[in-house]
Image 1 (cartoon, rainbow, N blue to C red):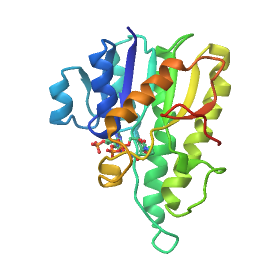
Image 2 (tube, rainbow, N blue to C red):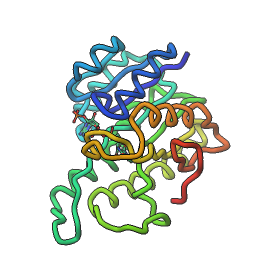
Image 3 (cartoon, protein in one colour):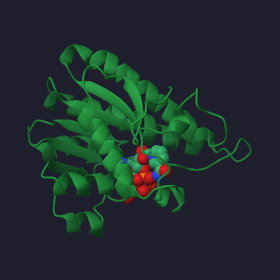
Image 4 (tube, rainbow, N blue to C red):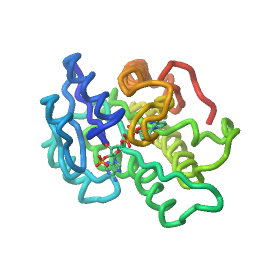
Length: 220
Ligand SMILES: NC(=O)c1ccc[n+]([C@@H]2O[C@H](COP(=O)([O-])OP(=O)(O)OC[C@H]3O[C@@H](n4cnc5c(N)ncnc54)[C@H](OP(=O)(O)O)[C@@H]3O)[C@@H](O)[C@H]2O)c1
């Protein structure tokens, strides 16, 4: 049994990860801004008021943990505001940067004192944040924020190597959630299952890598 903290657990992929981790007997703390009925129905521990864009939100999560060790931190909270070059709104781009790029770093830094050798960190980024894999363009704000999130994953992996903490960037697939307005190839259940498997497999040998939930490595 491991202690997992999952951000953005009110709905979508985060909610499913929490459900599955709870079912298999892990100790899971669901970090949310506001709990959903679906989350409360799971019956696991919930940390409320955890807006990943604020220090106050991060501190609420630290307070909720009450000094307990964190084995796996899943930075899952994310925001997509679709755009094109013509419709790009720079304020919206900054909002996405706050959530998708700075959010994982803010939460990771806050929780690091609760992590030790063998702890793991996952950042749910997206393959649309890959420079090498961009063939379709569009979504400037989202793509650029996820590219920065990928850099955060590599940077954290480099910095935390000496402490024996492994870091991985994860792509869940094209998943039918609110974010995609219900479009996608898979439902949140199998996506969450794949992400959990990738986190289970993560070691110091694979720290600083980028994986599809289905189990193949992705280019940065
Ligand atoms: N769905 C896909 O196809 C897909 C593909 C690639 C990557 N991803 C990534 O996968 C992750 C989960 O996405 P999803 O599809 O499950 O999206 P979703 O259904 O829209 O859920 C997003 C979650 O993030 C939370 N969140 C947003 N802003 C937040 C903030 N400032 N502080 C704390 N929590 C915040 C939301 O909480 P509230 O309920 O409070 O708004 C919600 O729980 C995201 O990082 C996303 O970018 C998704």
